[in-house]
Image (cartoon, rainbow, N blue to C red; front, side, top):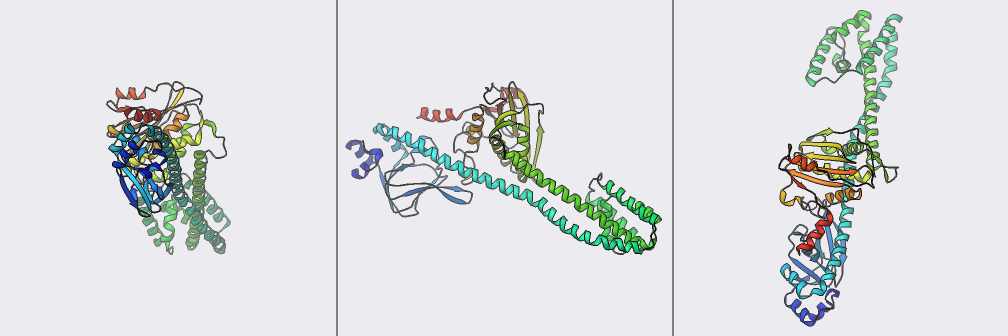
Length: 500
């Protein structure tokens, strides 16, 4: 056992007495390939040293388990979570080959630092390196998940207008084939030049009228269709029910039909109405193509604004455009849900000099968290205002709130309240670092039924961010009693070291 311990670089400088102490308190593990020693989400209870074999770290990303890193003989794990006071494993750890390991429980680990103080420095160095690697890998996986969500949402949003364009184009092709033959049939009827001019003007007036009409509710539409169908049946128009719907959507009624029949021969009424309906349908389809293609253009524009394609990394940024493009990107999560968005923008705010695509990542994380917190039912308020030489962006939701006991931990790396595989615990960390990169500030006010995040950004990137004071103002207003949290990542890490 002592020889095995001496093979570990961490223990190479220890005395025989120290090695003996470690040996007496260790437990041996013989692992077969594929056997786990730690499961993501389970409690941290041991420190492990690999003597022989190979182990791998994996992390659940969605429904898949992805490799993060592998280790060979002489390496160790578990110390980083114990030192950082992480109660649960952040990754899965399993044997890739037949492996021999030693383990010590948490209490023995802390005693180890006292009995063998020379290894403490190595522990701290390795912990920093290990966390940096794991954080980098998790950020990468997190971005892939976000990209997948974005792609799925965009595909969903694009599918509807793209399908509408394709469907309308197909129907329009049929209409264009029908119109010449319908026009020929009209010419074969006993219709005078004056009557043809009347029909031409009537069609143009009707098309112009449709541009100002609003959609009818289904019940009113049905009632008016029945009324027109009855009129058409009374005037011996074959299959009148087929054209009734189009006539109603164009704002036409039985009074209009009475005027029409006064100006054309009765025997030509069926052919005239069929031609009229085909022309109106063609216009409807063109409008649908125009609206759908416009929607596609809006989505493409939102993506370009969201990602700041073809622009320098830093530029003047209108926070309102960023917020709106973010809401467009997240539209698939809001559409059909019971969540409403209320905007209170100060449009007089000047643009800020910033990394536009990174700020949009901040809005995405905060708004997406708010959407997730409410379970499909609630309200989100987005407010902007000027504050000294800064811009304040406030995102509030009326979800259940963040429990007071975890509010101080929300900006810690890997801290998450989501289930295994659902979150990396890095969304708010990334958000904080982006805001910090902009010399800004982020604050949280939360109580049951209301959570508010405030982001304060200097207008000039090189400027300083004054104290917000908004949370303090809230305590004397409608949100009296809400807890305010303002912490930095540096203080989180430093405090963990002080506690130990």
